[in-house]
Image 1 (cartoon, rainbow, N blue to C red):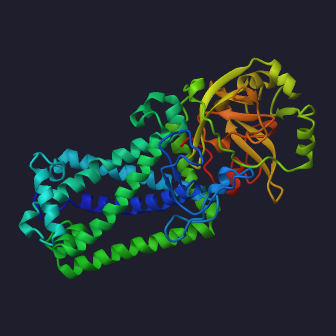
Image 2: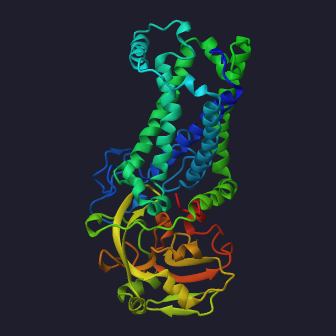
Image 3: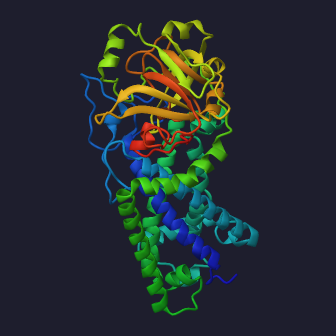
Length: 492
């Protein structure tokens, strides 16, 4: 292949990849803003982070929750930007862009290796390292190599492009998988790649984002300053045999399109959040369920692994009904089980404690990014299924809680009945061998270890078996899904 030509498939992939990476960076920054702390340990405390963003300081004289740590993100820098704990749409865009980026990368890699074009990027001689150092010194001292040095790239370009095309993407994919509760609980040894720590993978994922961001800035700068005429022709048409004015016009139009596209989707998402979510999750949820839905958790930890600090996520209910139950030590509390079942019944705490008990030590993975390990004791959901005998038409199980927001909306979450058959799906009434405390969900909470934390309902009031959840709340499968537009699958 001529050194002054690029295949058109590479030109197109280059442009699509640029758009995807920008979306990934912007949406990723919005996700980070909801818990702007990075750690190297999975025992995330308020003081053991290695990097912190934002100015919020948590009080030491009263209860605070993980929600209080969320920062407001900029509509200009992040995608789509917004207030505290409103990053559901950022996640939806992040995963959508990630899937397009993966498909584009598959086409790019496939073409490169099928045609032998990979030799343009991947060095085949150790001499590339001293040559790259020489090139770097030259650039730093403003001694630009002659155009003949680019055959098709100089040594520094070749090393940089090889790293960005063949090293950074696998790093981002591997670290992303390490943040999935479904994947890591099904394949517990996988996290050994990162010292067994999800937070190490999260930190490395952030560092990878910084490297991508730095590359984009430097890449655009160098393309503009070093042999712009040659570069702009190759980037736009894949050949130098084209008029410079035509290439510049296409290049400027492409940059303008990227800018307008980002402004438009940010504005459109903010104005039509529900409609945009509906379109994105129509693709995301089936894809995520196909990839992760079959993974049954099996990872447990030992007593020595338990975290000394376990964040509280959300305040206890503030209703007269709940106050009365709390003040009487939940002696009058009963769990109602109904809906599409053969046997409708209710259980007291003593009834639940009389049933077969399951204990498990597991890692809680919050959608915000923090994690902690705790012991949970309770009743496996299979015991509830056996007693209720759900109708064959029932597909979902809805957990209703005592929580209500300022508008009077009640907290609930819907999960598949198949999720309840997982070996680590329990109704927990104990935490760390003590009765479940108020802050962490007393008197009863759900543990479904292949899901993110927001699906694990606290302060459970009742359980309902249904064939559809469109009639509950806004019909999106949960309070968070209804109000801050989280994804329903909650597996990654």
